[in-house]
Length: 196
Image (tube, rainbow, N blue to C red; front, side, top):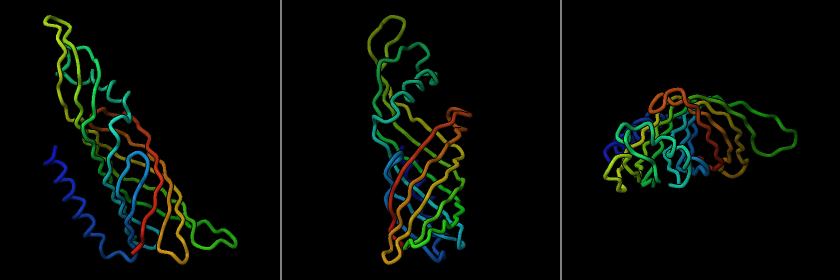
């Protein structure tokens, strides 16, 4: 798991360096699901690249992990009892199209955006289960839950006129290709970035 996270971090660093020639960049915090760090760089006046590195509290999506128990062949002869999410890492890369929303008398700039990208989620999940055949003791096993697929999103962004801060809110849909093909999952978040 740690090796995969380091590889993913290296990929993000390379992508950030390729966007370094952008005229406008910002770095900030995203609150929601997932929670994390967001980096945005404009490659044209209304086109941007965004990269996110995030996580989620272990209690989020409890039903999702409970339903996933039956997907693992390691548990074919087991009965689900409970689970504990030890760690979760989200990596997202997006290409965004931004459009101005003119508002009379408003200071700053209000925009709406949409885009597409990809999301990778790695989670270490410890399952507690019981075998259906003797011995019927309780057992524990940790699995790495991997989800990957295209992501589609839309949102709004406000940039202050005199302060280099941008606020945003967005929703997105992930279409899983790995680990559960063609399962759709929704995400939402708000946050702020410091422009530099």
